[in-house]
Amino acid sequence: MKLFPLRSPGLIYIVTRAHGLRTHLLKPEDISVLSKAPDLSTIVEALLKGDYAQDVSAIPSEKINAISLTEIFYKKLADRFYFIAKITSGSLRKFFEDYAKRLEVENIKRILRVKHGKETITEEALVPIPREYTAVNFPAMVGAKDLDESVGILKETIYAPLIDGMELYKRYNTTLIFEGLLDSLYFKELWYDVQKLPEKDDIRNMIGKEMDLKNLILALGLKAKNQPAELIEASLIKSYYKLKKRMISNVIQERPEMTFDVLMETYYSRYFQGLRDFLGKDMIGDVEHSIFNSLFHEHSKIMSEKPLRLVFVPAYLSLCEFEARNLTTITTGKQLGLSEERLRSILFL
Image (cartoon, rainbow, N blue to C red):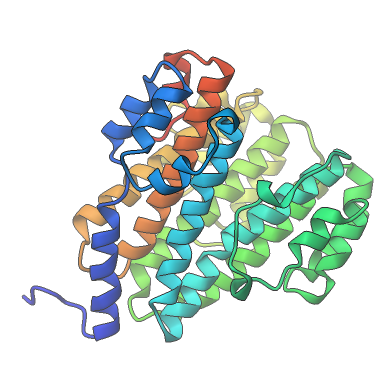
């Protein structure tokens, strides 16, 4: 048995670099300690000792709050994502550039939600994406007078299909139709990239699970709010992995009290074990957290069990994203005065 089964020097290099980068991530016990901090100032003191020190130290003390810290967490996330893309080439570079487009997608979602609510947003509230990695004119979208104009600005980008969603948006008055279209476009391109990777099976499994589970969560959430099947189906990701279109149609069409039984017949039944009481109620957030916490542990396990495989790298990027979400939750929770027990219940640990 070969110690390092990768044949390409490029693969060996990117996996080796990811191992070094992983050491900069906060450990679960670090996140746990931060969740117990009495206030934001204690959290800031802890952050000044690690990877976030330079950016955190640049914030004037009077401007330190959950919002300014969140900007830093997602700036670091973007730096980590695009660093990986920069040090790869060929099909690897294409995959990691498109993987990072989830940050671009999140920015578009944020803008459209704000425009829908007729509120204002600044560029500082967006994840900073290097200009060479995006064709979206975010300053124009932010400055647009309304949602229609913001969507229209996407006409010359890969997100042009959002324009076709305007009719459904106006009919149901929800941005979920746009969010579903964005996720569909994102995963369609990423799914195509995966097929061209030199070690695709593990990564295909990782991306496919995320894609299918997002669909199930979205369908369950909209169903719990009694949204019509037309809207639910239009909001779904159009690519599937282990989840068949027929299965998700059953989830949408079945009576609420039978939804859990339908889920138990799918490939993803184990993710919903113990969640029967949350379904059909206004507790989909708890369902989503439970499922993504399972993915957090799976991706951590991938890094332990497959340290020499290419899948180690997207698993590392996933943990980077979970770290940003955890730190945002902690700082926001502290500012809002959430109890330690409540805060820990919504972290990924």
